[in-house]
Amino acid sequence: MTGRTGSTTGLVASEPPAETWPAGRGGRVTMRRTNEQDRGALRAMVDGLSRESRYFRFLTGGRVVDEIVDALAGPAPGSLALVVVAPDAQGTPAIVASAEYVVTGRVAEFAVVVADGWQGQGLGRRLITRLRDHARAAGLRAMRGDVLSENRRMLAILRDLGFSSRRNPEDSFLHEVSMTLREEAGSGQWLPADWFGAY
Image (tube, rainbow, N blue to C red; front, top):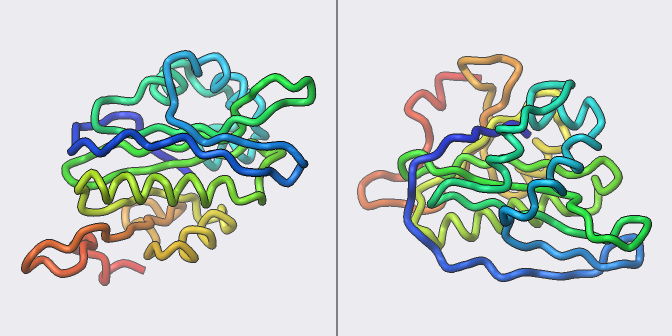
């Protein structure tokens, strides 16, 4: 799914703990917070994506510019970036998935990408769930993201996780997904003001 790289700061939640679980290939994978040392491994993962996966996440089938990869490795204060690490064929740890949110006002704008060989194993679902839980703990009001309309697998995952979905009124090739995290007194559920006017 697509995502932004800029951010304004939000409230601070506790450091998300690392989580390890068995993978479908008989090994184990670990989800943890991204750090600056991940830049090279993130570059390798992004470069290894198929054109379709690169397009779904970054809206380009070509090379993703260094500034975007740098932002994945060094998110702005108040943001959260996570990676999933698994051993490659030689047993060397490699990043196989990445997810982040950046904060705009009280809203977490999120995006996620999973390496082609690891898609369909629940990594994206786990990452989105962790982002959601952390954003809620940080006191953010909602989560939102943009998903290409042809990315049906991601749209199905997000709907299953409880996100609402509509066609983006400014770009018919995108679906806007959102979830209310915190209901504020007198505000009801958070949705864009024109939500029911677009379809």
